[in-house]
Length: 100
Image (cartoon, rainbow, N blue to C red):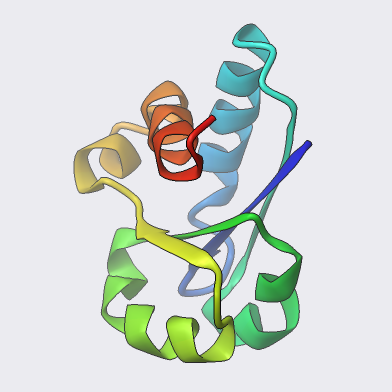
């Protein structure tokens, strides 16, 4: 069971993407928990993650998140996948990053 945490500006804009990712993961029988939070909660919520995904609007904060969550895999969500809410593409990105 993988834990995937998404951060965006307020935790709202990624909620639709989270639902699309859950649908895609279910179709692939990929066991994971996926949650979205505001970037401000990175230090609190990041440690529970196997992978942290940053929304395109907060990608500039990657360095800060790396400091707040040392040792975590941190990726920026592909801008096209985010814009089209392509949950399957984001799950593929996660699986590649985690070696699953």
